[in-house]
Amino acid sequence: MDTPAGQPDWVQRYLGELATQRQLSAHTVAAYRRDLAELAVLAVLAGHHDWARLTHFDIRRCAAKLHAGGQQPRTIARKLSGWRGFFDWLAPRAALAANPVQGVRAPKRAKTLPKALSVDDAVQLMEANKQAHPEPFELCNQAMFELLYSSGLRVSELAGLDLEFAPAARGRAASLGWLDRAAQEVVVTGKGNKQRRVPVGEPALAAIAAWLAVRPPARDGSAALFLSARATRITPRVVQQRLKQHAIRAGSPVHVHPHVLRHSFASHVLQSSGDLRAVQELLGHASITSTQVYTALDFQHLAAVYDRAHPRAKPK
Image 1 (cartoon, rainbow, N blue to C red):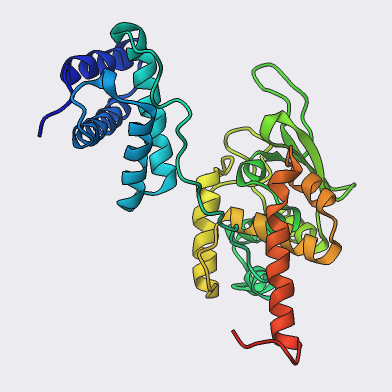
Image 2 (image 1 turned 180 degrees about the horizontal axis):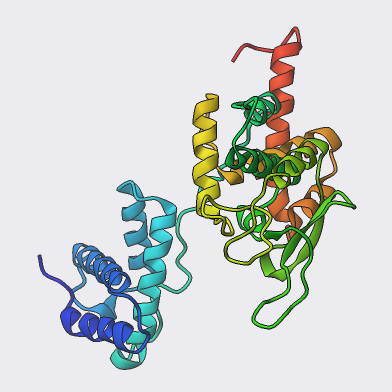
């Protein structure tokens, strides 16, 4: 199939600059190549054999065709971004009057609610797989999972916790997060280096105390609260893997990862308190907009209660 005139030359030069001047990876450059090749085909189908003749309306039709073909809004947005960058580069070289991609937006993405466990499922997950004589790593897991749900931490915040605050020393930065057992709180540094204090519930404190009673010295010399099997600071990936296996053994009805526990924490606190601002502070959200999604989860809970309890509720 034909492509717009000069396409191989312009595209090759552009991709060459991405690789050499911007130092993009070969994988990224290959993705740009595929997206521009797709645009070239769409341009020819629209009757244009010259990049310079493509208009704003042509690009909108191309995006609409991708959407009609089943491509997701996120994918189309990525392609539009790549096309926009190409035409920004091409404009001074081909004397384009304007960037035809400028102002073209991808279709709106459907808003998806974060996955959250019901209160019963969350409690069952915390209570599952408890042993009469647990191994140290099982106590570590229990403490981590209880703390994730108790305080709504991000997994990176959990992994970064120290036993207590440690000031900066030679070759070592000050603690970014630590356990304050006296105040029954954790202090964490979240996105944007924003520090916050979050309460820790009694079950989590008890689980942490049981873990600390058997916690071995860290081999990496760190003051990490939670350790891997090698006695080094645990990584977010290991936390994810351990929680996944724990949830499978517990018979959880959904795939559980650390952020599911964070969503569950937020949803359950909001259900009980109705205080959106408090949930925002506990989660460390910079904007209340990020927290408002949990009002939809709360409404789902209320709707479910209504459907179960109201005598005139229609069966779903």
